[in-house]
Length: 219
Length: 274
Image 1 (cartoon, chains in turn orange, purple):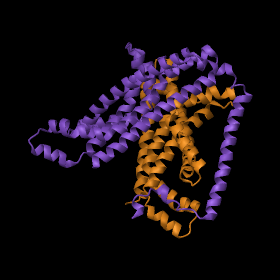
Image 2 (image 1 turned 45 degrees about the horizontal axis):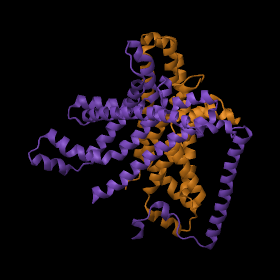
Image 3 (image 1 turned 120 degrees about the horizontal axis):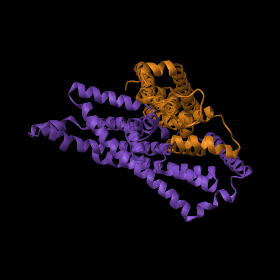
Image 4 (image 1 turned 90 degrees about the horizontal axis):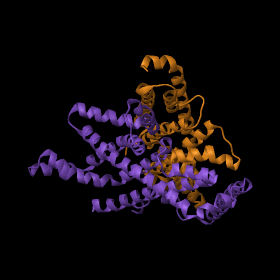
């Protein structure tokens, strides 16, 4: 099929697919970010079981393949009488995995903070949570902008998992598989999706660089 | 003087006083109770839905079950190895383009890296699964999974290799040139071997991603661990237990690879700086 034919026949579906991918990416990244911060706080807390739990979480979700996690959520969880809609399964899978990486990036951001700052905060009488909230998190976030940007792109790439379950509307990968199993979409069908993914990644990268330039701490 | 050796994690708190010791003790106790409650809730859910029944687990004591899973694991290794070799070769070529002084080659390298890093692996896999056969090109199943996974990884591999090349001190190149070596010899005999040593940990980390991506082999019916798990499920009618075991096997493999990368990273750091 030619580009014009494809676009006239499936143009609105592609648009919907792009929006679905964006929606999944945004929601998953937001959830991953919040979860990542919580896990990071657990990992640096003085409470040993919480440290262990945080570490355990990271090791599990850093190392599990996305497809394996999604299959567990979609096909195995119902056996535990937990039935989630497909969209939620995809969202959970695409949030849990980046959360582990988010925590890893934040940890390395934290390790870049000068130890003297923490000693100073303590000398000023800050409690642990105050030190974390007012000294550590802001600085760790500022020096993690670039890694968080690539995490956002990675989250977007992970949302392609949505093509593995029947979803309506479909995501950008799902729609290509759909078109190619129902008609002969050829390379063009793939190129449209690839370009849309690529443009999204470029926009994210561009925005990330802008933010990084503004907030980076020069050492 | 002490702060140079402290990590932030250690510096966060000094030896706590009696008051905070008690607070930490209480918080520890509460968190242990909560974790136990969580584990209990999970086990209970397994129990009341009957998933702990022996019929879902007993076949794991059978030799044939593990032999079948092992065969799948072998398939995973085969696909991952083939894919890793392809990604390394392609990544090397792309890196050569990228660092080339030829503007066109450099642009091609840059565009390729950008492309592979911005497009999901699954799209490449569907391309080889659905579009490539439309041109009448018939590939064996293992290539249908190994090539797209390799393409997806090759961009990052190129960047990793380039970082390694850039990390080799400039003096090395200058010294080799002043000894009368040609540019080509300088690169292949002096720069690249050192660069490769720097990046072995990152390459192993990339291999983890390759192993994870081979999970999609079920799309093309290539008998990897996931696919064989599926077959076992239809034999024993035990979805949850088998998928859970398969997931744990994947996690362990990737965990060990990551630990290996970490270990090499720590040990080479010492030897290179020393």
